[in-house]
Image (cartoon, rainbow, N blue to C red; front, side, top):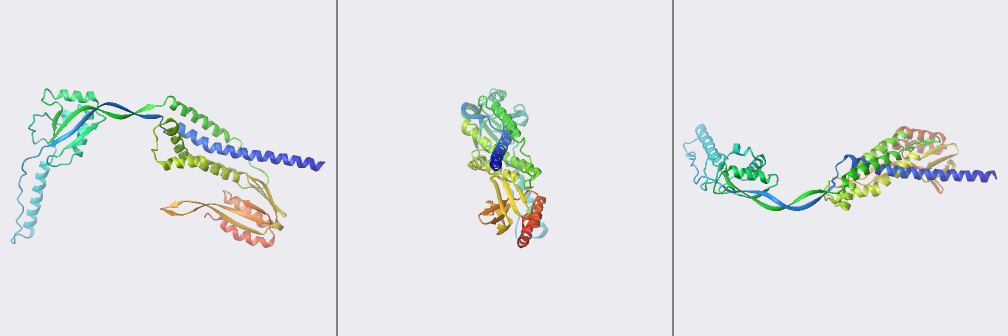
Length: 411
């Protein structure tokens, strides 16, 4: 009767413990998604507007001509005869180069040294100071316009020049025959107003406020899920030290912020047709979705498994309590102890270079196998190795000592 009661109590405790473990796993998953999502929605830029095409009037400006002198000043080259040599020849060459450079500089300068034959008004930088947006565009077009005879520059749409500023500039030119054209330096400019299509930002109704509200809720739920998640067991050696697990959680949340940003940006684009912060690159979308669908569950599983695993070592047996229940192996049944390494795939400079992420201590015997997760701290590893060596049969102690250096090494 007492045995039956003890069995029922034990089964009940085991079921409650299993439920607690699964609940902690769920809470860690919630934490790894909700805290980064809350921080992204509250603090990082996410576009809450769509792009819409409309037609409106713009100022168009072109360079129709670059005035050039009909003939260039002729520069006489130095005499390279047989009697020319030494310093005298070098001096002649330098003078020739300097004179040629001066002629070309005068020919292609921006100074108004030539007058157009069309009667267009001539303006200078001082005249343009009252029209700052137009002034910036004119200077930009001058820099873009390559020097050369008769070179022109096709019409350019001036998005940042207001229509009223162009109108005021035209009125300032007076009653000229063609108020749309003017000379600036040696270049002839012509402008006109025409309609064209452009994109404008249209805010999605209530989306900005909704993202802030959702961010606040996510952040609260993520922080609330942390409550009670760092309780430690007093039975045996705790594989995941409380401090180490907290650090792991912080690192996982920090890494997840960028991936979650990509994911949320892609979701807004998909369901609200907003303009993407990260552009249309498919790789960013894939990485964000991959992290949420696979990365977070894997990280939550690994961290929870490490956090809850405890190890009890006695003279008779080794007991491991973990994510999937309890396993026990008697020392008399142990056949071998080895170290298994877990690698993650990655590429470095185009070459496959797997990265080691964990070293699992494996103790096997008969049908049973114990897998001891790699503790975050070396002090925990030393405690496990010391306790194993203390209680292990003589024939296994040397094996444990041989594995110690490899398990304690960083790489």
